[in-house]
Length: 193
Image (cartoon, rainbow, N blue to C red):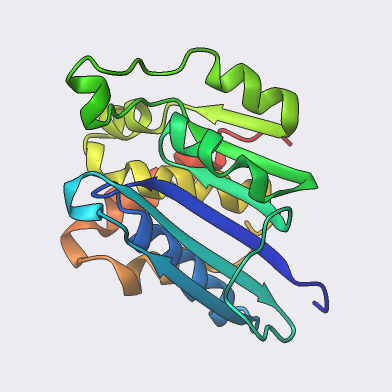
């Protein structure tokens, strides 16, 4: 447990990034890890960039992940994955939701959504691409997209042995526990091995 692991969540306001990072942090704390978490909201209420950083290990002194230090980047939106790719360490992994949220300049026609993002990410890091929104919609609640992504990161980091059911039961409203447990499992099923 001595090695510190660094996970960076990136996305757009309203995608449930903060809840996702709180679920991860709670599970790690319950398992006995020292955990530090930081949040950057930016212009989240207007669809702006949101990031959270979770660091865990035997003893963690700072919640901040520097460039080239993230073991895993979990991106809720494709372009946000590209924006934060410099934070991945040389052996790091990326979990990216194959989803586009267009910014105001793109919506107004003054800019284009970049092409080839997923290919560029795959060239730089081991990458798992999932359609978390579609998976969540198939389960019956598109808002569980964030928990689908948490499930994927749990499997990608080898953390599936922790008691995630208790964390979900303690974190989400009772009426949403079962759907979130299904979302978590569906996310785990996206990673081979």
